[in-house]
Image (cartoon, rainbow, N blue to C red; front, side, top):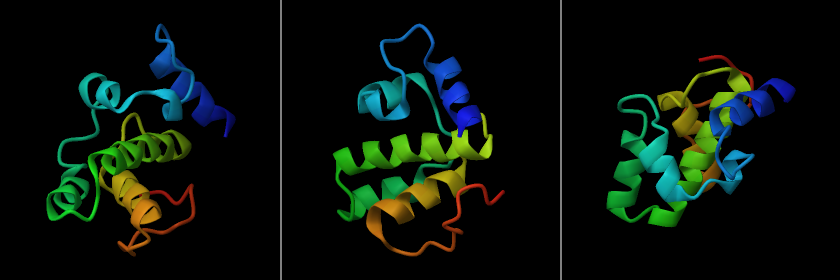
Length: 102
């Protein structure tokens, strides 16, 4: 947990935020990027109406936290899938145990 906090703190250094949960959605989308294609499934959920824009921001925040916990530099598809699974409750074939390496 400490390493995840340190990873987030390093990324957020020089900003008014200390944790992923504090970062506004607009900043998450424009300043820090998930891996290419990582948000595809979440964006499809938004297009289908299964997720709101606010829900998408929340998925992205949780995906950053998952990435920090497992030691990724930025969220990949598995990190986003886990965040989406946590948000929607729909199984996506991702282990729920944080720390399960992808």
